[in-house]
Length: 232
Ligand code: ADP
Ligand code: ADP
Image (spheres, rainbow, N blue to C red):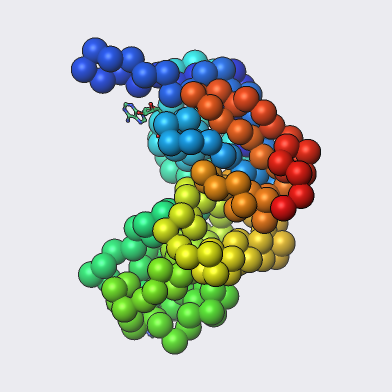
């Protein structure tokens, strides 16, 4: 489903080279909830941007659903990317748009017709438990509600992969719990592969099947969560 083969990534900026990833080999199977944990600067976001095809590796190969990034045209890239939903630490909702409009964005972009959009948006809002907030603006919502809207938007194109980048880091423990339960439900119900980036071990222990521990651009350990971290 997601495969990294000897992937390295260097950034060049003002003559300074940063080795963000070094010789990463990683396989994430369909249906996994796969955690990537590491301190700030370990290379987690770079890894996510490679899965998303937002960055290209300097060396090696990233393969998503048997398609290698190196061999895709720009329009094929857009197709693959559409099947990857993403949620963020700070939710990234458009403040000037209603909840309805925020969730509709990915569908408007692919020019779905209005009735189909409406049906899908209300299905998604129902699924995340916020049907009554369609006309609200993000500033009227709690952090947990904003993340539910972020999740609804991420699911709009029926993705095969959900990327969660520090998705609970701005939330209190109780809200974190409910968002993690929602992510688990998405994985169970739709068999969506989840890749979850975090710096918090308890988040990994609560929902991940597998984990890779990153340090200074390398995976220093990986395996089943109970083998790597023990029981929570
Ligand atoms: P993490 O998400 O684990 O905090 P990152 O992938 O953001 O790690 O960063 C890994 C390393 O790459 C860090 O040293 C960071 O400063 C560097 N880096 C990340 N993005 C860029 C960029 N766009 N340009 C230059 N250096 C970058
Ligand atoms: P437009 O404003 O161009 O008509 P929208 O994308 O805002 O397009 O709306 C598309 C459809 O969804 C319309 O039929 C509209 O009535 C409906 N809609 C938009 N926002 C809401 C909402 N908050 N609650 C219920 N229906 C909505």
